[in-house]
Length: 295
Image (cartoon, rainbow, N blue to C red; front, top):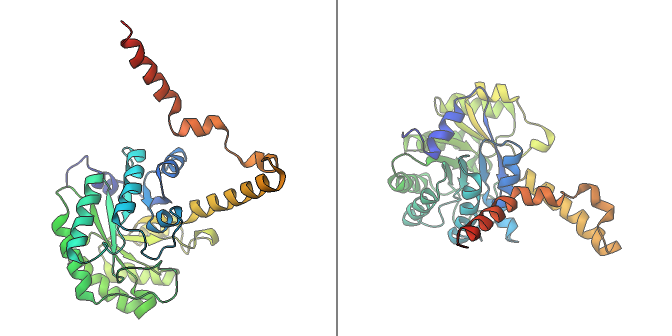
């Protein structure tokens, strides 16, 4: 793999002593806030992007809308690797190939592709289903054929834990890894025993762990997760849930009192807001370009 690609940068981070922690972001601004907190990788969460558009995570948002937001995130991230949610690939194998080519052009470091039917639903909801194994293997073959040299890394996700049980999910994932996936993402692991069983069954492949329960604590320490070959931990919803709570309080204060004094201490100062989006630097550049044309 080329040494200075987004995929190579993510792979290098995964070789460290603890997993890569990738907070979920949904637009350019949330990406910049995560970078300010020293995030070394970002997760472009499909669920968070859908909710930012006012839609549930039920496969309503397609590739056009999703790629526009992912483009914002990649641009904001700069050299920081972005892990993109490619959902089911938005159709059959031809759609999967198109999705992978699109996301690769945007510069993502990795993408995850899942074995739910299209349209999918959030893996945390009841009633999740999975397609036949051979259908997912066709998606992976299409994705691998569409991946250019140098990445992005291909993450196979299975939602079969809820639909078929852990052992069936692990059997599926072994086939997905043999079918060309670089990283294993078993959705629905929520305890130490499940993670350990996945690690043993899928060796030597690196694992991605969805920390959907992080508000109540992870089942294992970051060091123990690393020892079980968990290379990436994603946090798809935490920041957006925090943003929703903050907006809820702020709108309530505004509409009840006519101003935001009740929540003033929770508001970011205007200087921070402008710093995040580089207002001063762009204004200085504009002034410089204008002065150069005066003569």
